[in-house]
Length: 322
Image (tube, rainbow, N blue to C red):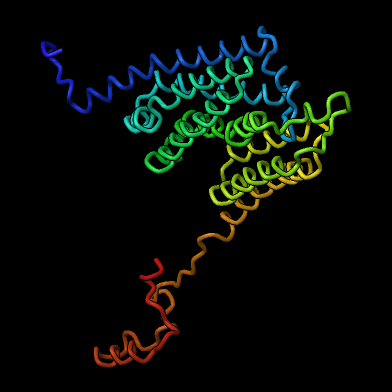
C-alpha cells in the first residue's frame, strides 16, 4: 500500500473507496436478504407464514398484505442500488456514504438472519435480531434527518434514499419486533386451554399498547413533518392488522381509527401549511402611499425626528416586514 502513488489518507480518496465498497456490498446484501426470505417463505416448513398461523396474537398481520409491504421494501432498495451507481452529485454521494453507509448492508444481513431464526422457532434470537434491526435503521434515519436532510433540489435522494430507509424502519418498529416479543413472552392464543376453542379476546391490552403507541408516534410525525412515506407505511401496517380477523376489540378499533387518522392528519397538515402557516403582513413603501406619512418631505430634520418620536405604535418601519 505504501508503494501506491495514491495518498490513501486523503479524505477524497477515502470517500471514493467507501463508495466503491458500498457499491459492492449493498447489492450483495440485498440479494442475500431476498434469497433467504424467499426460501424461508416458500420452501421451508414451517414457512414464515406458517409460523404466523401457528402463533396468532392480538397484532397478527395478514401475511399477504405484509408480503406486498416487504416487496415494496425490496423495490426501494433496488432503486437505492441504482443510485449508488448513477449518482454524480457530490451531495448525493456524501449522503450515500456518510448518511447511510454500511448500516443498510448490516440491516439486510440482520433481516436474513431473522428469517432463519423465525422458521427455526428461535423466538428469543428472532426478537434480539428484530431489536437490532430497529436500532440500525433508527440510527440511519436520524443521521439522514439531521445531517443530510431531504431537499427539493435533489428529489432522487428523497425518493431513493430517505423513503426506502424510512419505509424499512416502520415495519420492525410497528409490527415485527413487538410481534416476535409477544411470542417470546407467551402472549399468543395457542395453549391457553388445550382442546378448547381459541380465545381470541385474550391478551388485548399489550396489543392495544403496541398499536396505540406506535401509531400515535406516527401520527405526530405525519402531522409535524407532513411525512407521506410514514403515512403510507403506517396506514399499510394498520390495514394488515385489521384485515386478519378475529381481533380483540381494543386492537381492532384502534387500528381502524388510525387507518383513517393518518391520511386525515397528512391532509390537514398540508392545508395548514398552505393557507395558515407563515402568513405575514407587508406594508407598502411610503412613497407609494404618501398619505400614511403626511409630514415626510414637508418639514426639516427637526420636525421629522419629532414626528418619528410621536407617531407611536401605529406606524411600523416597512423594512422590518420586507
